[in-house]
Picture 1 (tube, rainbow, N blue to C red):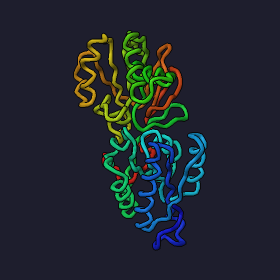
Picture 2 (tube, rainbow, N blue to C red):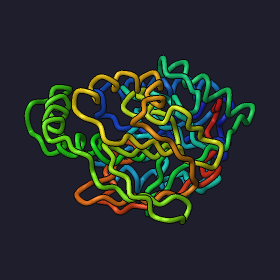
Picture 3 (cartoon, rainbow, N blue to C red):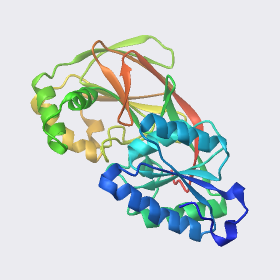
Picture 4 (cartoon, helix red, strand yellow):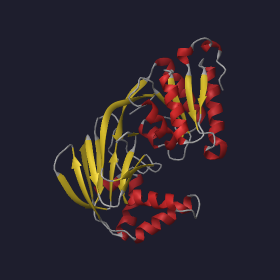
Length: 309
């Protein structure tokens, strides 16, 4: 995967760092990476694979690759790997390419990038590199962690937290079991929310979602109006809501029509602080830690190849 294409020989400035988790998708990610590498080499680039023994090692290697000033860091995988890539490129001059190969692909969706196969995505990355088609994209930042999609707190984050603790069942059934367990314990949570440094707002809520992008969980448009180029979060608050009502309106989240429900309110802000006892925040599916947490929208924090916002 490191041999240069004919036009790239001796052109180190055109190197591409290809970030991949070869174990993801039962080996599918490795196959997708090889396909992407062939496409990019065919476009004249030297492609250097970046992998690690675990997430921390992969991030360390990704940061080292970015420090070498490649033409781009290109992530081949789903939202988890893209989230890791964001930690490496955010705030740098190195652009990010995305070859969506996961089940959710929410950041690729927010950026208007191909999600129908690694070959098409690799062709799009190569074309964007050739024409310098770069789009400045906002990111959220909570502490030292960058996120491109949604920071979740409340019912949804509690489901994720419970699912991560469970050892059985496996796969999708584990998530379903966690949903059922959290539904049984459902109650409004005593949130306090601060927007742009204003007064604390006491809000009994089922969940609060802070969206730089519109969706999480593979297309659930919880913050349907959010844009990743306006310098603002969309803050979706689902207020007091019983089990039956939550189950009735939840399918509307996939269409974004839940925003008209009387239990839902939306605010827009560049900085959001959330506080609620016993609640853990997750951003882009990754654990941030217990509330309180403050998220700040950083305008144009990353340049994404070929993005269409």
